[in-house]
Length: 387
Image (cartoon, rainbow, N blue to C red):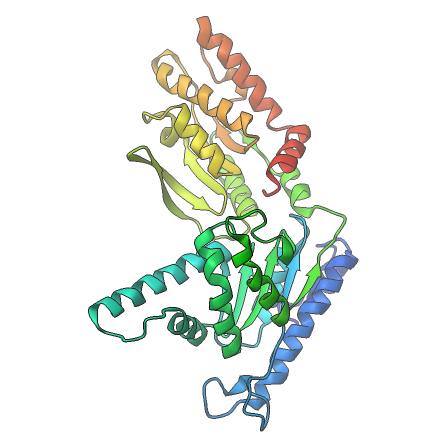
C-alpha cells in the first residue's frame, strides 16, 4: 500500500491519494466538490501576493483599493456523504493565518455574546456606537478572515433576524465563507417565524458564495455506524476502548463538554455533550432520582446516547432497574441510537426475574436487541436524519 502524503496542495489530490490507498472508495461526487473547494484555495493563494502594509492588505487587488472578492462555497447534501471530511481537508490547507472553523450554533452563540457585551459598554458609556452589529462584525473579521461553518442551519428567530445585517458587514470587510449544510440555501429557516425578514440573507449568501450539492449515492456515515459496536460486554479495558472509538466516530471530532438541561426548576447534568450526542455512565442516569420526563428530555435533545458500565442488576438495585427500563423505553420510542457497555449480555443483566419487573425487563431485553439491528438503524436514519 502506497503511503498517503500528510499534506498535499489540493483537496482533490488528497482525496485521490486516499482512494488509491484503499482507505476510501472512489466517489465522483466528492471529487467534484473537492474541485470546487480547490478553486477557493487557489483564489485565496492568488490573493496573497497583493499583501500590503496593512494586515488586511492581502484581500485587496493590486492598485484597485477595493477588496478583492474571493467567493466562498456552500456545500449541501444528505447526511453521511462526506461533507465534514472534505471540510477537514479544506480547512487544514487554507492559506490564511486568521481562520475559524465552528458549528453554526456555536458561532451564533458567540455573536450574541459579543452583542450583549457591546450593549453593556453602551450602557456604561464606554462606547457611543448604538448599533452593535458593525463593531461585532469587525471584531470577528479581525480574528478570522475565513469562516468555515459545519452544519449550517437556522432554527432560532434571533439568529434569523440578525444574519443579513451581520454578514453584509462581514462580506463588505472581505470575509470569505465556506459552509456545509444538510439543506439548500433556499430551505434555510423554512417555515420559521417571520421568515420574510430572513429572505434577504439568502440573496446575500448567493451573491458571495457558490452553491454546490454533494449528491453522493452512498451514505458513508451509516456504513460506518452500522459497523460500530453498540453493545459491548464484558466490562473491561477492551469495552472501554471500543466505546471510546465509537464515541469519536459518532461525534466526528466535535468538541465535547459538560452540559445542563433545564427541567422544571432543576437541571439534568450531562457529563459530556458533543453536538447531538451525549455520554453518561449507568450511575449518572439510573442511580440518581430521574424519571420518565427526564429521559424523554434526553431523547428529544440527542440522537445518540452512550451509557457505560451497566452492572448486573440484582434485587438490591430495584430502583436502578426500574429507571433503566424507563430509560430504554424512552430512547427506543424516540429511535435514539444507543451505545452501551455492560457486565453481561442483555438477557443476563437481571439476576432474578420476579413479578411485573421481570416481565417489563423482558421487554427491555427485546428492545436492546432490536436497537442493535440494521432495521432499527435504518428507522433511526429515516426519523432522525442526522447521526
